[in-house]
Length: 309
Ligand code: CP
Ligand code: NVA
Image 1 (cartoon, rainbow, N blue to C red):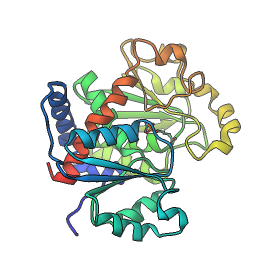
Image 2: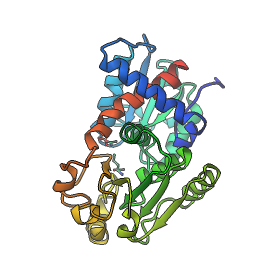
Image 3: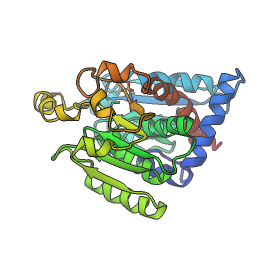
């Protein structure tokens, strides 16, 4: 107890995010070279999923196996949480069996409650506020394609959601300029925006939130979008699909970005809504590199938090 380290917000990695991206690169190189790297031999990760997942579940599970450990998939319906056992008791009990807990939750409060009561590291696998593991992989992917964050213009177009919030903080931490274009009423979290701007100021970079997608992508090096309807917002689907229509990332919008701009999406994509087939399947899209890099970036996160690498 006392020395464990959690990843609830990407801010928890603020001091060594760059080092973590370097570790991800070295782990990826070793994996590609077929060199075994198993700092988590004999270790186990519990994974609690309150929401669906393809990438997070598979990349964490495969990542643990490649690191020499093991992952357990737990759904709240199968756990006693579904029958009223508290998150705190679940955290205390799981801490006696496993070496880390990954949690995809509806509410940030519950992730914090789990982290407070677990004596092992807790990793946020997406909540209502943030998606830190996604954005660590995204930053790693940007570095692979652009070498440095310095001078880059990053544009986010769409919903000011969990992914956008972590991107704002992540961009600020690495000193990359970011402009988010979100419709009124769908802006990023106000407190997160304040923190991102404070950090960016110290790093000499700029964070803007606007409502005009065309203004956001002007001369951008990276254009990023995410779904208009996040998990848990299904009831707002009709309204959201109307409001977000002008925020579609299509070839016309992309014309305003730099000619060699890359296009990113954390996936799953709703083709024909936030992004067109033409763009997501086009030569500027790096969405599959992003998806692959979830594996390498999370292996770095797991090695650092569970084995102190
Ligand atoms: N990007 C992402 O987190 O995907 P999943 O919901 O499939 O895990
Ligand atoms: N914003 C999306 C991300 C999915 C990976 C959601 O929360 O559903």
